[in-house]
Length: 128
Image (tube, rainbow, N blue to C red; front, side):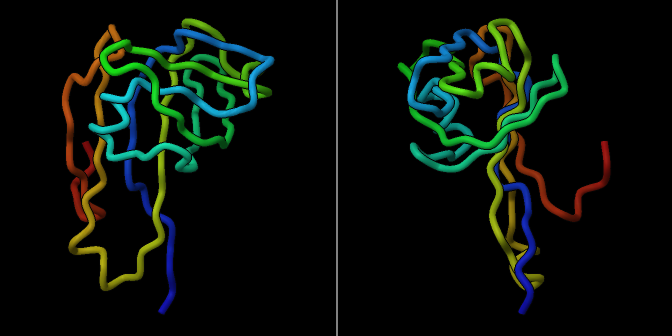
């Protein structure tokens, strides 16, 4: 059996609302966005900055539900600033037999950093 990494959850095009360098690391995400993406507090995530082309790994902490908060904390604040658009992804390891049952949750975010739409994607979907 060989395990391979696959996208498990994605919050797409969220806007950074806060960037705080002197904080003990992490990314703060509105708890409603975390729930829609099925991401958990302290779960490892990759953050891709659309605006600057930077990437970093960190972990999630929940923000106030409905606040639209996307806060970049600690050293990562050098890589993302208020107003930047980011993609937040979590991955899982699957073997080939699990693929037919795998559904990645993709949360499309509106301009207020609220859930716009939730899509379920499979490894077998046609490209858009």
